[in-house]
Length: 143
Image 1: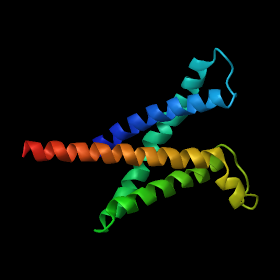
Image 2: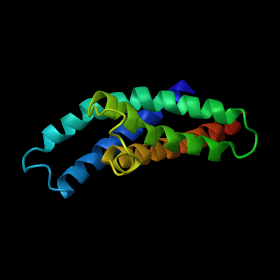
Image 3: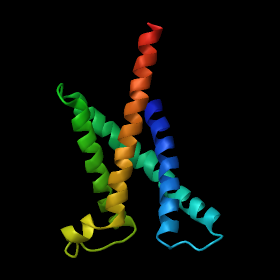
Image 4: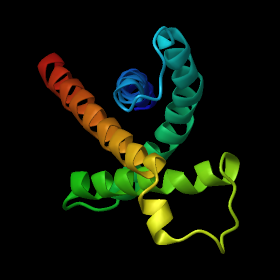
């Protein structure tokens, strides 16, 4: 299972870097000729976050959902989104410190990190789901 999560984190990281780079150029924040710098910058930050926070969050979500027999995938999906949106709390603590008295729901929910955290957590879940299905099909063929 851990190997599956690492593989999922690898694919999620690749897609996250590509999508963030495209977003950077579409929004006009990147200058021409900075493609390598933008990709390198996102790689330095995104890969460790997905591999550490993403894998741990996914293991917790799957662990909680295993306790429920019915709607296991839906519960796991909900917890993946919860942890993805919840990443804004860690992000704001380490990168954009604001006292909790100054935080409000509008600022938190409209922050781009909240959107991308939810998006990449959904992506992580979907990739993990398909890898798990593929692995279970391979197991049934082997038996």
